[in-house]
Image 1 (tube, rainbow, N blue to C red):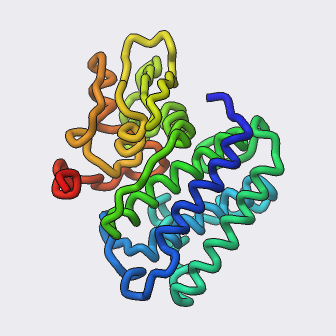
Image 2: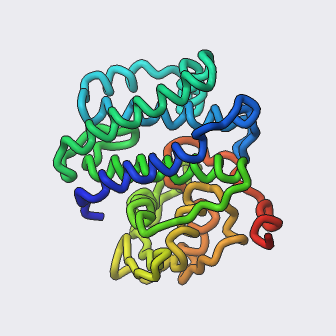
Length: 268
């Protein structure tokens, strides 16, 4: 995926969408449970604020980023949970203000760089444009959790292209998180955007292929929907197995979502 400058603008638009999901919520709704076990809407915004803080440091202060990462204790999942705590103790109004301030700072830091400039990140150094796509993946995933908690169906756009491209780049994460051997060759991803646009990511000549709606690919790889509830198909045994373990983020896979968990909403 060749990073383009438009990813920085699209990151802003996706952040605005998530902001709209929590704008005006009262304390009871901030405390509403989301599909992520043990996480409320407040936890989701705290996590996004933490991740965007790391992204700002990666883009604008790489040494500070390295110091933060070097100081993490325990497992990655332990670090994620610990990273929420500074954002959850001062009330929801303060949390929302910190999220908005941090989001704006991160957007400025990333857009100040050429999209191809390499910056440090959690697993390996990546171009700044790809880091922006990673931010969009986080917004997609945690925004979906908030939308589910609020019984809202997101209106997806072709901005999903950046997230789908990021899924293709991180196709190996599902294997690595489970200590499974990574296949010697990647997959081809043939996906369709909400507008009907068709995109190909990954290994263009690969025999193993995953195809279907780009939104479904992203829901699968962020583990926000079970494969049984998505219109994805696999060509080849490796691609079919990938649909079971797809994951676009670092850390343990977690329980994911159950088949049919959101079936009533789909019928409605």
